[in-house]
Amino acid sequence: MHTVWKGAISFGLVHVPVKMFSATEDKDISMRYIHNVCGSPLAYVRQCPSCEVEVKWEEITKGYEYEKGKFVLFEKEELEALNESSSKTITILDFVDLTEIDPIYFQKTYYLSPDQAGGNAYQLLMNAMRDTGKIGIAKISIRSKSSLAAIRVLEDCLSMETIFYPDEIRPVSQVPNLPEVQNVNEKELTMAKLLIDQLSTPFEPGKYTDDYRAKLLDLIQHKVAGEEIKIAPAKPEANVMDLMAALQASIEAVKPIPSDPGTTTAKPKKRAPRKTTAQAVAGGETDATPATPKRKKAPAKPKA
Image (cartoon, rainbow, N blue to C red; front, side, top):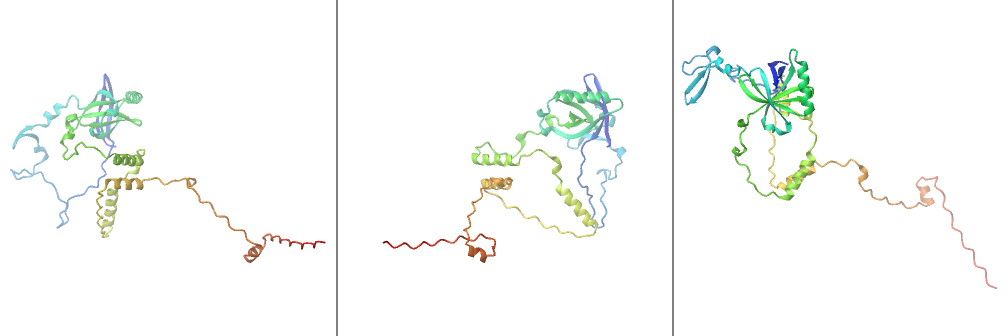
């Protein structure tokens, strides 16, 4: 892994030297813009619209537009001086419960490993946080940007998630076309809860895959091999107007199949009629027991 930051975790008077590594990677397939006339990739040029010349990196500075077309300029050293005191320190401000943080605040995850001779302090902090079940809320500056962060134990490693400041979260009231408060049909609500219950399962991240990326990689391989591929357009799905019918169909689709055959009631078998000796012999059943012949009644004696 590539080290993206080096510094120390600070809580109280304790300093834990750490290195930071990105815990995630973007696996989106990168594509270039190509001039379809000659097939050349397009280049992006930093050009000044006034001087009409290409601008070199050493001639570029940063500025803030406080009015339309008016800027205040900053030197690199001026911006670095603002974060000089905290640029190499992850300062833990408070310890809280993870359940108190809404997921909307989380940005990006990093792994933290002990640096230099900080193994003992690293292990101490990790064990103390694991035993108490707390996470640390800290401040950190990465690439001249100040961020809040959550320090927590992930398996046998300290991890850090940068989180947004509260004023960076847009209020829900700004979302357009939200439904007004209204009564919900109780039958529909019951069926919706039943559907949620049937679809509920422990979270297994390994079963979720990026189907689009897999199809795109397959298409790229075919094109590299010189094959022409035609993809049939997907059929538009019909709009389901009846909410109850949609809920019922969804519940039927996820109903578990009964695995115990003993739960079904078997129909009683009809008893076959007993065959006579002649029928058994005719049917090839030569080992059948011959039927006992009936005795004839003796004639009655005449009276004297």
